[in-house]
Image 1: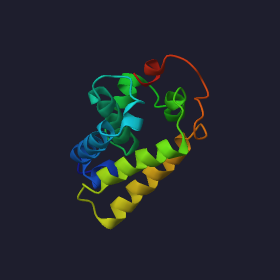
Image 2 (image 1 turned 180 degrees about the horizontal axis):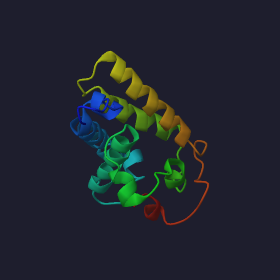
Image 3 (image 1 turned 90 degrees about the horizontal axis):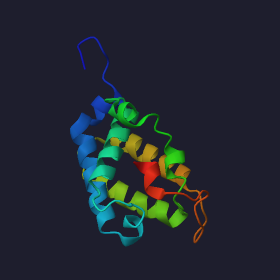
Length: 144
């Protein structure tokens, strides 16, 4: 940020350190949640953690590294191979909101972040409980 530019939401939320902590804490929860962990094809959650951090940083006005490395986010398309059920959404939100609670944000920033994360989680649901993903295919290829 230069003296001539207004701070972005990314800056107001605390920049890289905030998003790195948010995503790290989220994936600590995922690692201990067998139902969610099964949705990640990689042995190590590190690459998924990096992708989510880059996505969130870019979304909130930070570096555009995500698009530079991976192209347009296409959030729903990248999740389409997975059956994302309401209960999986709720588990995802449980861990993500728990991660938000570890951040040192003011009430307004917390509300803004929680609102976005909740709306994003609800938009990813693509299957009823016990349902299958709308598209079959190599799962890992979509999120890499």
